Length: 268
Image: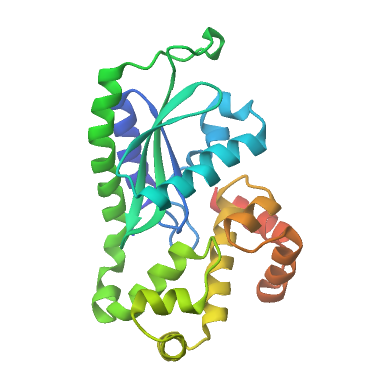
């Protein structure tokens, strides 16, 4: 798997050439190895850490605008690259990451001040030509990053493409409501046959497989982000913080807070 230094070198080189900061939302643990080791810097996963303006904005507003609303737009439109305008008057270039047609992450470049924004933001104004150029090259760069992260999985995919297809679909969709009929429709099978196939390939039921993927994503966010417990529960499709805490403790043996305190310092 690519190392932290190798991925960071690519990100820093792009930032130097493009003259802007990059932020990465990693929904499907693309930039985290099986051992939990990140391949990108800790600060890159949050706008609130990457950009001072976001850090000064109400947290709920940031999450709704840059996470939930943006994800709904991407999953509805499947755009290659687009401009995002923040309620605070800032502009970013956004390149979603797709795997098998599924939205698995997002790369953000920027940010700039809109022509009508207040000077107090302290941001350079958005130049139309520069934004257009960035919209051309950012998705190509994003594809290259995605390719680097997926190279390690190619042998597995070749050995069992059906298993890989199921795993990719579940890991990409477990942030929201996901049912066995959803997976069955994707595979072109009946729900009963899809359930048997999951058990045959993974050795566990569909419900257990989805729970495991959600908890793996939760562990990723606990160690690699500053998201709060209720936010992680929502991002992982686990509903309330109470349900998240109960399920996590039952399956991991620690509360989410205990897991975060125990493992974060070992990976930063």
